[in-house]
Image 1 (tube, rainbow over the protein chains, first blue to last red):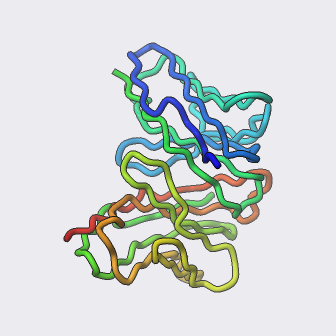
Image 2 (image 1 turned 90 degrees about the vertical axis):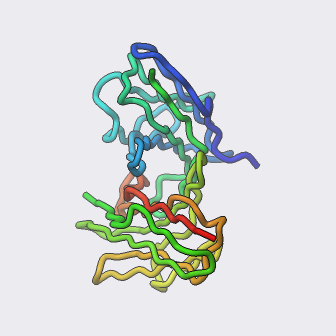
Amino acid sequence: NAGVMQNPRHLVRRRGQEARLRCSPMKGHSHVYWYRQLPEEGLKFMVYLQKENIIDESGMPKERFSAEFPKEGPSILRIQQVVRGDSAAYFCASSQDWISGNTIYFGEGSWLTVV
Amino acid sequence: AQSVTQLDSQVPVFEEAPVELRCNYSSSVSVYLFWYVQYPNQGLQLLLKYLSGSTLVKGINGFEAEFNKSQTSFHLRKPSVHISDTAEYFCAVSDREGGATNKLIFGTGTLLAVQP
């Protein structure tokens, strides 16, 4: 009974490269959230997706960041032309539905280091 | 818009002592309240949540929290901590009238450091 699976767990990229982070939600979950945790800070909401739809991207930086959740396969968070400030832990979460109050389950995170 | 304040960035405590981690929130609408725990280099695990009903909520690992609407607080407590409780604790809220979303707004976290 696998939980939310994220890979890679650790990723090192040079400035200007692209980073791709993948997330497979819990079985039976069709709602995915991405959060970013900067050093010494709490988690900040980035984007909320359902299959093939972006529902809320109010927390996504305007440039270089994109997310998708295709009909088949994992959700992908893509960061183009990474900069040092993108170094953070990126957490994916999933839920069974969008109803506020229902439990959201988190993955173990992907730690991105930009050198 | 909602916001969550965790005033204590770090709380040192001796093993078997009681502990309280403070959480205050601000919101123009009704909210649901959550506490999550994060062990080093791991994801977040739900400790407990308040949706409605009794304002005292019991969670896993012996933790409990009390919702106080007048003080807009949701403090987390444990009567006797263990070394294994050392972790980062995050308070979070979600909009009760959330519409088509279920996103969480987090506080900055409190590091509970249990000493022998």
